Image 1 (cartoon, helix red, strand yellow):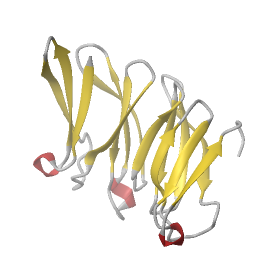
Image 2 (tube, one colour; image 1 turned 180 degrees about the horizontal axis):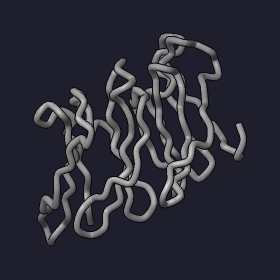
Image 3 (cartoon, one colour; image 1 turned 135 degrees about the horizontal axis):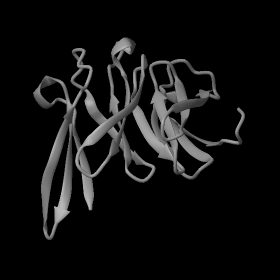
Image 4 (tube, helix red, strand yellow; image 1 turned 135 degrees about the vertical axis):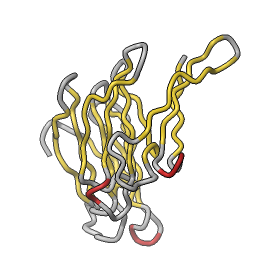
Length: 173
């Protein structure tokens, strides 16, 4: 009964609005702004839910890698609580994968990072790179977790037409 809506340029620092359904209406519960505002207006440009009451918010900093990242929140019924963050990457896409997995696409570096959320810590699992070795293919421009061990990664400029790669995660890469 809750919905998250990102507004990446809200007041020039981005934001995420959390609504809850009450009958036929949706009421605004809270607005989350970038907790480490660094001149980026892209906080909230990507949002994904994972786990029971957790969600991740992307902060696409473009080529300014130092300002980009992903913020992890838990909803405690009254307010969102910042649980962790991954910084120093130009985040362009995020998706959940399984129950506690998080996929982060960084097309500037042509990489996709897989993480496991343990409830207290975001642990890196592996980093995927463009299987075609095209540095300008924008591998990681889109990501989608399909199951606990499968994901699709987009490379929008591979061969000037774009490609989608299906990966199967077997615990090692």
